[in-house]
Image (cartoon, rainbow, N blue to C red; front, top):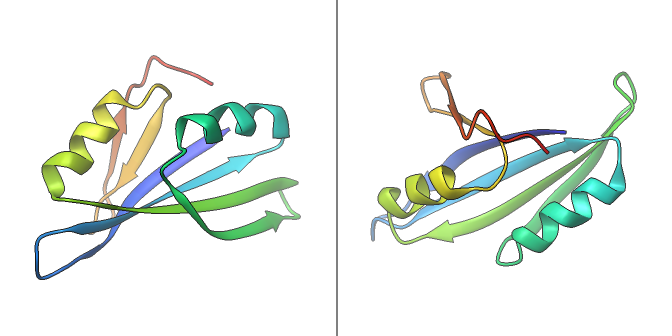
Length: 97
């Protein structure tokens, strides 16, 4: 399972809208993860026929960037953040789902 996150929009009131993309083959593992992400809203789904993986995108609004970074650091599984400059930061590299 691959988990990628990114900040979508920064609003005028400093709130940030963030998204997480889950790519998975095993639906049982994603159910465990969805329990962890109970506050997130599903905004898109898809399927990659080339990789034979399902894709799920979730969205949530945070009060500020610090809350977003804190969420990434405390996330219980390995997560990669894509920055606006197309760089990748890996959080919780030792934790595997």
